[in-house]
Image (cartoon, rainbow, N blue to C red; front, side, top):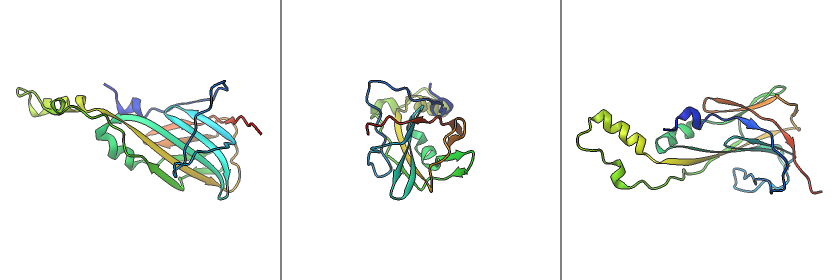
Length: 172
């Protein structure tokens, strides 16, 4: 059985340049980030930095899988971006998509008649389908944040994840 610690255990890896097209990150308005300046591929998601009329923007897109019962857990947590030089930043905008859950057959939620209430609770928990949750957040800066290695990490739920930036490939 999957556990929340595994589901929310988020680690970062550098983006490797390849012949494949890069992942398109969507902001909280569901608009694609077209020209990222830098990007980071993090387990369960992506983070990109671009320039907008409102200033420098970091867009975080996390997608995780968890039991349907954890929807409230995901809703209660707000991602935070930590920068060594400028400290902790809360997002200016956060958007959580409705969970995408497979429909469980009705018989899966029925307990065998010989189960105790405790056994029935465990049985239902094990039979509950896993849902996909997407959280998007936008952080704004007056200027480009200092992007040296090991200077950034984000926090979501109870996990701290380092962010390793890679300069985005430009076609200009």
